[in-house]
Image 1: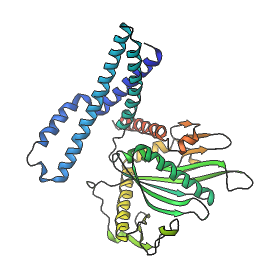
Image 2: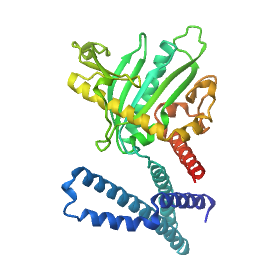
Image 3: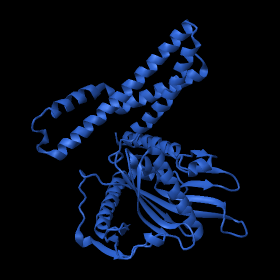
Image 4: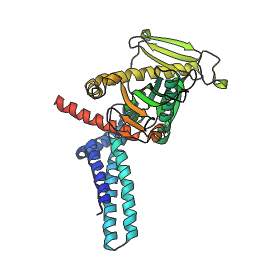
Length: 374
């Protein structure tokens, strides 16, 4: 077998090993039998929420088992075809099977990454907020570039993107923006993007063509699932209404329909500026509950988060990634050290390699924490 083909086979087998481990294959069939027995219980739907959760959990197990089985079978089938094609000197059969294995390698890699998205809220939709840092027009322009990057990434995933609120910059770009991104594992993918993003470039707004450094913060938190109860004391919140500032023209609201909710105990502020004030209250309250839920998730994972943050340069605070456009081209993640010179591709939404590297880091971090606990 050629070295290139052997490498593909080894990568597929590695992905299968990880899928088997994450699935706990040795007990999977037994767990499915238990799910099936519970589904047949005539009293199941007496509690609709519990029944829906059971059905979701069962379907996730069925899908995971089916993925593992199909990849394993497809690998075996194509290896057999290559062997038969070589025995019969049928180069066309061999070429088709080799092409199928290359495609299977990519499919297995994607499924391997998805298997890492097993956190409590990883499957949920997500809110994403972008805020320009100090630096005026430069940072506002950088914020708009980040917004475009994440929207492009989401669209490539087939996700739905809804703009929740936006504040325009004084001269260019945006001061802030909030999005709801909906799709399978949206939060699981995007959660690694929270932190400070740094841009280095020759400023298009500087007549002297000097190099500028700009910062923006990105915060990601899951949309709270209906099955997750988050209590908010009405006495702890202040609700303000105001006139939304948009792009101008027909998009400018003429009534004070935008809503801002401030949560006094935590200092969390959330906003929404759709057309309906009632809708804005609902959206903002959901965003607040999601932020509070994210704080709880962070509290539970405090030890792991502290270990990861210790890897960064404390001088940069929460900086996670640098995007350098001049004097050379490079995007580098400071947590995983993953980097690329394809800055255009990254700014056009090619973020999966960075997210995958952080997912792998999180898994290894959890493993070390579990080992310490044992």
